[in-house]
Length: 116
Length: 115
Image (cartoon, rainbow over all chains, first blue to last red; front, side, top):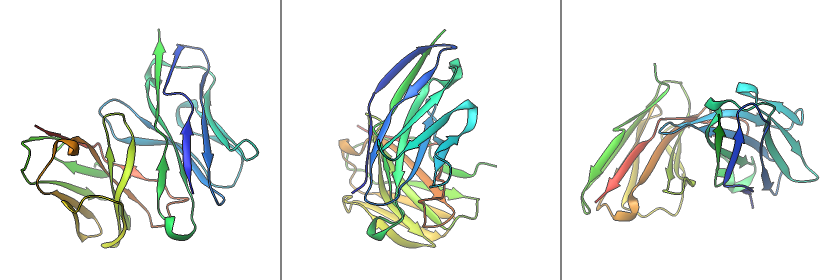
């Protein structure tokens, strides 16, 4: 069965400092993994995705994530936070096998606050 | 030029009423979805359609009835609304059913409040 655990429900950082949003997953098969961002009162927007190519994935707005199979992790990082990064971030897992084809599993979200 | 558009954006109604939310995508995608986001921001899939055919039907009360007249539209009708139906409903689409590698494009959401 697939599932996603986002280890922090809230993360607060100062502008200009690094961001780390943690995500662990479980999947019976080779997963595809995504990070989506949701700004207040908006829909979700894709930040980046991993689909069994390079383990270090670069996304939009300076974000990147590293797929670590041994740790079943897909943590999201950014070297320097910007005020506009304040939003809710969702880690998502999918697989392509069997009856769950086409189904995505969302983490509970991490609210990122950026202080000036 | 909105890729996935939902209407209405806000909906306030009384318990027991029937309401609909409409969704249209102009991306030429084959697959469309309805997701429900609760007050704690948790997102869960409700339905997915591929080329007008129902693919995923989660354990959603049968008061919820999706309808896909064509692959560019997926509407959600809700009968006998209950307080617990209050949530934000997101429509999404993807290129095909094989969403393991495909990206979902989300609408802006429809916030339903049941009084």
